Every structure is written in C-alpha cells, then in structure tokens.
Length: 226
Image (spheres, rainbow, N blue to C red):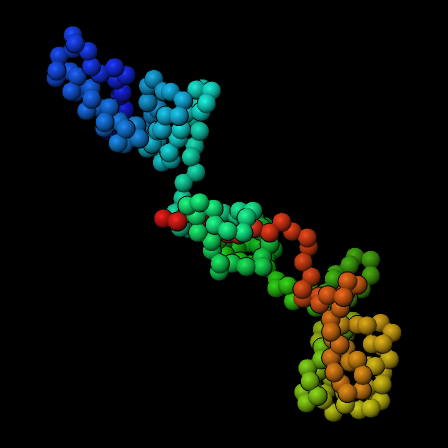
C-alpha cells in the first residue's frame, strides 16, 4: 500500500497523468493509514501510521520528533478504570466484582493464568492459621457454630478442627463455659447465651470480619466496545 503523499499534487505545468497518479497515491495512503513496515517519509504532527511490523497504530507526537503508540485491543483487553460508568467506546465487565488487583506469577496462590481470579475468599480472613517463628501457630477463630441440631467445631493448638458433638455442646455445663468466655472476650462464632445462638463475628469497628476490606480507590473493569 502506498505511503507516499504529495503535498501539492496539481499545478498547471504538471501533466494530467502525473497529477491523477499523485492524487490516487494520496487517497491510498490515507485509506490505509500510511500502513507499512517502516515509518512513512515526511511525517507531520498528528499523522497516523499503521505499523505492520509491530502491528499497532502510531501517531506523530506534537514535537514532531517521535511516534506514539495508540492503545488498541479487543473484547478480551480488560482495563481497570477509576470511574463508575463506562468510558467512551468501552463496556463494563460486570462479571468480576469485589476483588483486589494482582500480578500473576510467583509460588503462591497468584501463580495462575492471567485473566482469571485466584486467592482466598474474604470469608477466610476470619479462619486461618498464622505460622510464627517465635511461638506456636494459632487461629483467629476458636469456635464454629452450626445450629442447635448439628455438631459444632473447635480448633486445637495446631489449627486443626475438632468436632464438638451436638449432645456435648447442648450440655448445660458446656453452655455455661462458652457463655462466660464469649461475654468476656467477644470471640468469633461463639455462643452468646444459653439459647445457643451464634455471636456475630466482630472486629473493633463492629463490622463482620467477612466484610473487612482495606481502604481502596474503587473503579470498574472495562474493555473496548468492538
């Protein structure tokens, strides 16, 4: 495709065939975005070049001394944008919600394919084990209440769940112990009274641990509307 562009294709002294040929080349260059494996000659500010080597559109910068790449993409090109509505020419991907942004790789849970979600759920923030070099591991959660007719769980020093049978947990003596501990420490998922109701999971701010989120600048995941 032509990359040549004649600034002044017509003059009285120019043969008609030459003039028409220059005009045709100009039209072909504009039609193709000056496409080619190398930059077109005689570049000017704002000129568009479809670089067939890098397969990207470029535009001549305002100082007329370099080419800038223009961002392009398809419906699989997902961008995080700091706004609530769709950017012009973009569509919001509403299938991915309530997630942090991370770089793939490493040896942990983020060692997965890009374009997917990975990692623990928010709810697991309230039931996990810390491994410490200077002391024993421990769990934040010490009791897992179900209801009045099913077994509950407590946790041993290694963080493993231990079943508390329903017949045991409904014993008035055990209820009294659990109530005493709960009233003094407000621990997660413990009994609040002898009616065997589960306490809400709380933090110092009064919110459920499963609802805890670090302060964040909220945005939306968007992709080109093509």
